[in-house]
Image (cartoon, rainbow, N blue to C red; front, side, top):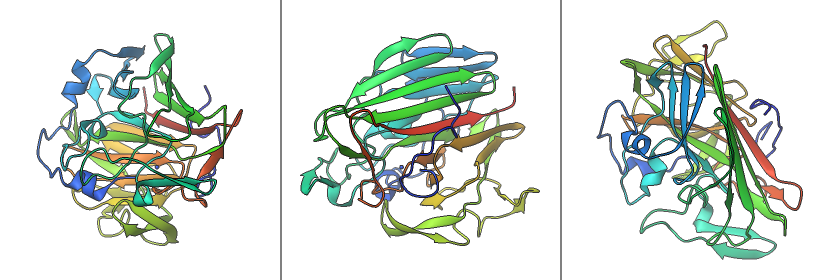
Length: 331
């Protein structure tokens, strides 16, 4: 498996998923301050091991990465469900396919035909694709690597499939998400939705992230074109900068960001001496930090509303879309 920068997928930005204000802010900032998704980790899953690193993949819960421990320190977190949104949207790191984030009017239009997608509950928009709450089939498994597959069924109107490869190493983990259709063409946008713990091993998280542009907000969870310049990720809460000029926020303060960005660099999260660098084959990232227990830094192939004609990737027989996402740390 090549690393997360190995493939250029063009959706929006130079290389080519969203956080929903209504979906998540309705939960407030209650719950375990460490953000640990204990309920998810208690469920059986596939454990991967590499040196002092451990990961648990849960095929039954949307093929998600349910736990990631580095030297015994859990770095994945759990948000606080609320507002009628599915609980599956609030823990671990789950794949989003065949679309990531919200869609305008809960509809997908392709080939001149508009299809309505059902809402998961009253007042909660269709979001995050159709594979986050279904079982994934395990195609291959070894002590360090697993390959999963899910078929795209109704309410998605086009059919198709999604596949994941997850490989744990002593100094990182690589996730590859692919989505395709061997029968017909269809529009696709992809993403990963990781929740990171605000506290790990007694240390508060620090996010380093200085994007080049912010996508203009149009409505909660929906975004227009990128606007260059200072953004909410590197402005009012900039308290320090390293030698490369990256912003250093002492903590992704709750209630401040629910935005999509263009960022050609690699975000970094640090819990004390433990530093984790995020890498992606895409330059589109979404940051959600409106809850205290955990926060999200998500790689996407396109900003939310990613099935718009100017953003979507058209896949077809023999030509799937792909997103690579990696987390790197020192051994």
